Length: 502
Image: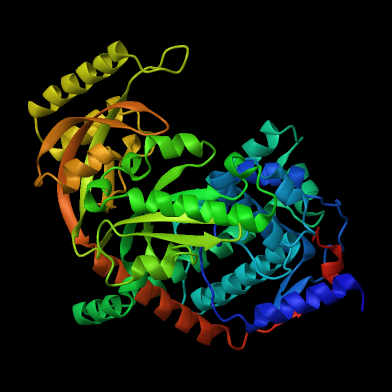
């Protein structure tokens, strides 16, 4: 058996054992621009597959090499898009498919799994999930609506536009060069139709589960350490800091980093420092360790670093507690601020963003800020003359510079604490505002500085109930899907040799 055959067999066996299936990857077009970019940077040898050969057979459904390639590339593009949002340019990662993920991005894979292994396994899982859901949809009589068919044709047209804008002669050429000679426009349409039916069934299945208030309360209470949100400040003193360059051994440098972190932690005098991240570390300390940064975190327990999770979630922890935790690369000085049990109602809100215009140096002058404020106040006055949600939505569509909400009347639903910028968050949660209240407030993040016209629309469900319901629903969905998938064997066919796995 060749090394490639061994890899395929091992991955197929792993896929058959994995009984958790998700629908998150079952979408028609993941991200066209990213997919094209990924196709350009992946080390892929373009191929001439045997069109009628079978790369995979899942529960009696056969998938050609071209179909496998389509979903394999979609797995790449989805991962690339996700990682790009965190790290920026990832060309090196995606080119180096043979390097273990543990040496690149630890959030993906384990052990010696490579990018190629990861993408292969994701493709198997996606195709298995698609097959199961599509079969169930057909069995229960699901059909495409007129709207579905129109949407599919619109997406194929968008695909064609992407192909032409990337200098392909036609959509047919684009599909053949990226997914193999067996991939046609008709196959693209067929995949889309299967996905639409599968998604419809998945959505209905997910919506079919209901849980009582008692079930949600009990589940949350049993898992509160994972579901609660924690606020804390971290200052990392690395052993490679220039202050320790004259020390000879790594042990001496680590000890010096520990002592520095202890000094910083001891200097924090309780709650008065817990309100302002800048005060956790003195200006002298920040100057002394100029390569280091102090960071304020708001993190759900599920996502806490294992390095300090046990200390953070300790039930005895109180505002102002500090500690020092040593690692192989230095020491963390940590300040605990607080814990939120999420027992509060979510908020539905609308806003209109008026950004200030930065000067040629990227600076927002006082004059620019005042101009933005005056415009926001003008819009607010317009709304006050007809203070309805409908008119606010109309004004948001006309004036708001927030591309994420202006097409939706400025609406954000189910907003939880600290999701919005500080000033907006305070309006929603810290000032006792009620549905119908409005204001003009300042706001800024790394992308803009300016003013918001904000409107408190209504309150929603209690956040803790939403979190518990989501996990219970996911568990129920996975259990049902596991049962459906028990008889779906994954068999690798000879056509896999024609698939692009590098």
